[in-house]
Length: 171
Image 1 (cartoon, rainbow, N blue to C red):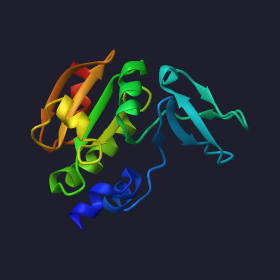
Image 2: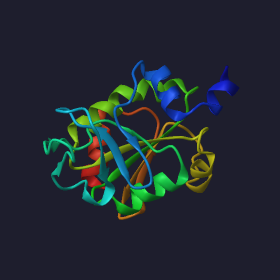
Image 3: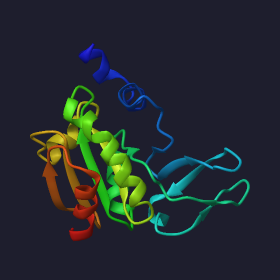
Image 4: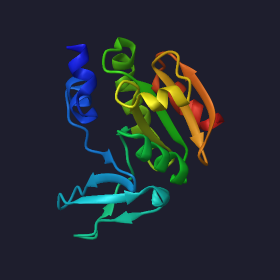
């Protein structure tokens, strides 16, 4: 089962371990989010995450990302951390990691509380091992804070939402 889980798409893994399907996905250009009014998918370009963005269909102002976004490949990760004008909190995790699953609700709370001020992304180190190697992730969960494309802080282990928010405030 572990081997099968590591070859699945990250969205499937996320759903199995959180019990719900993520509303936000990423690609190399931005966060893909559904409009709460009309249901159409919109691309929130990374460079514009600090501004009000309107739905391309109904012109409703879209809320900023308020939940963790899965970075499913190296190119998406690089685009996010290089282009986002807000701090980026990266959760390096794996689907088999019980402490990672324990921290997931805290990460969701922090993402909700920091919406518009920071972006929280998740990197499955089994699904994208290149990133775990690049950043020398030796234990999970590990949280890293990026500003302007550079890592400025990190800590490992399960943390409450308040600690995650404090990482952004002091980083």
